[in-house]
Image (cartoon, rainbow, N blue to C red; front, side, top):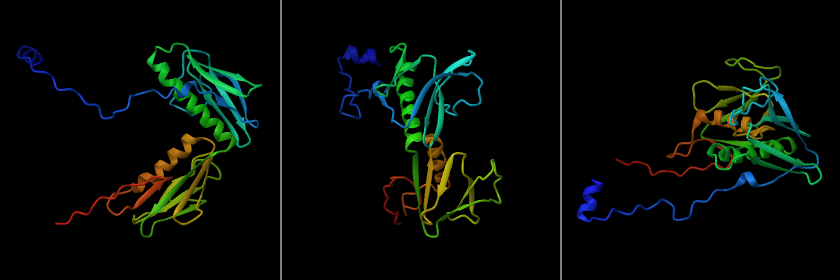
Length: 239
């Protein structure tokens, strides 16, 4: 078909991109990390099969070595550690309290992708141990309620002192969800759930798990909204 177009002299239609702006990378990996005075950052090596390593699965690790590079962040709210890929290099200056992330080869696509990802995870860890992460869920709907209970009838406890979030969101029975370890849940109002924790990934994942039981719908606007989430209402279908 392309050959016939060339023979007949027919010009190919021009492709128009969805966006008119030039695509540019954020280069977030190059940005330096500022370490607060009450936070201690240490570079260390962890055993490859250590259970003390971070639960972060987004950062690939090298398993054919006896040890892997890692970063440990300790602050007033707790302590977090994170394994690093072999090609990631973290430099920390204790005098200026600045940390920078680098990679070995900028031409490698995987290394460039993990550059910004690793830097973002380190920033989340530093913020978590110093200030903490919060997530607010809003229950919108008639009769929607949430209660924090010390025991549950449908879910078994996974650790001592675990609390459970009990949701009443239109089902014939309450929905009971166990609060993950390291996360604090409270209900300032019957229609509000406040989640607090030092690990952002765990806090947001649990919020998504709660939201799954009542995803916001676009006709009446009912559902469980996370933080500043909004939804555009659709017009009702009239026959």
